[in-house]
Picture 1 (tube, rainbow, N blue to C red):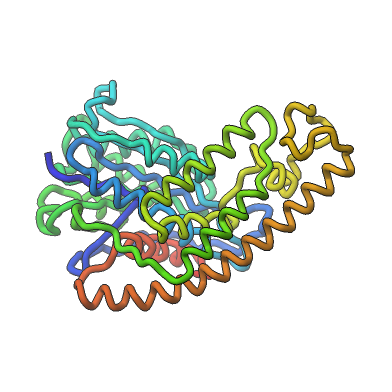
Picture 2 (cartoon, rainbow, N blue to C red):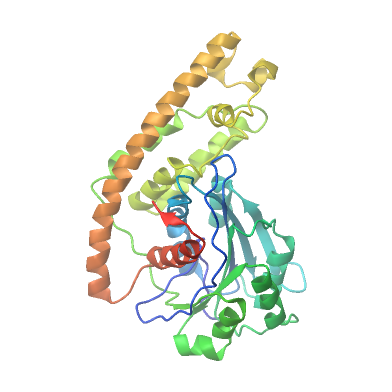
Amino acid sequence: MKNLFSLFTTCLIALTSTSQIQPVAVLQPGVAIAPENPRKIQIAILFDTSGSMDGLIEQAKTTIWQIVNAASDLRIGDAAPLLEIALYDYGNSTITNATYVRQQVNLINDLDSISGKLFALSINGGDEYCAAVIEDALTNLKWSTDPNDLRIIYIAGNEPFNQGPVDYKKILKDAANRNIIVNTIYCGPYDQGVTELWYDGALVSQGNYFNIDSDREAFHVDTPYDKEINSYNDSLNTTYMGYGESGKYRALKQTEEDANAGKKGAGVASERAESKAKSNYLNSSWDMVDAKKENTLKLEELKDEDLPDDLKGKTLEEKEKIIAEKSEKRARYQATINELAQKRSEFINEEKKKHALESGQEDLGTSIIKSMNTSAEKMGYKIK
């Protein structure tokens, strides 16, 4: 079985310096929107888990937070878009349906859950039906119907694109008619991807065709700022106040995804910490501070057993004061992380220039971000 690509989940697309791409779809530019009605960036990642792709899964795990940060830095006017991500795997023999297609998670903004699904992926042999997984994503994901929202599918693999019972040209024309961009990522030589119709798939959908080295390690740089950023991330975690039935569980999941990122190195942990300091890291379903900010918290209706320990037995006024203090601390920690992240980014940019000159190749994260930014700019987004 050939090595196949999994991104993002990293998602997503990587190219080498010798890679070639086709023009992105030209979509109708949108107008500036108010923060209370955010523009959406929806990304569905479909990757083959049929063969020996451990290296690609690792690549995905180490670049997911880069993608999240890049999306969070896009702006329409002063407003940040709302990022939603969906994950699929296909071609895995453990999938018990005729087309070997499995939705891992629908389009959601819950970044911890997305990370958890990615880190839980496993590989196994099977048949890879590219058109079938794209059809399922088009049919069953909760796509926005607003033409101003950016909607992208990334599919990765290295088996012939036309395998399986579904006509890929019909499905990709449907995607183009809905202004959903489908980018194809062939894990192998450029010309072979053309022969195996991945290039044609991108043309039909008005997306990009990429070829990548599927065995290449994602490029990461340890910086002088990582230790301090990760220390402030620990402080940031103390401001989360889980409540209700899922509060304690979700707080543990947050810590678990911190640990997953940390296993990939200090740099990946820093990228996750940066994501947690941006607007797209929202936890109002279980965290009192975010719920208060979103005006969804009904503090007076919560029973004592549904509260975190530091609020139990307190008056309503005392509870409000503690939440406000946590909110103020969170804003401070996030601001500091963002300042350090800016310095870290400048350091990494210089290192990446050297790396690109020495190796003749771009890294996975940089290639993905270029693709997303190009599509976003076509729709009127600016990079922060």
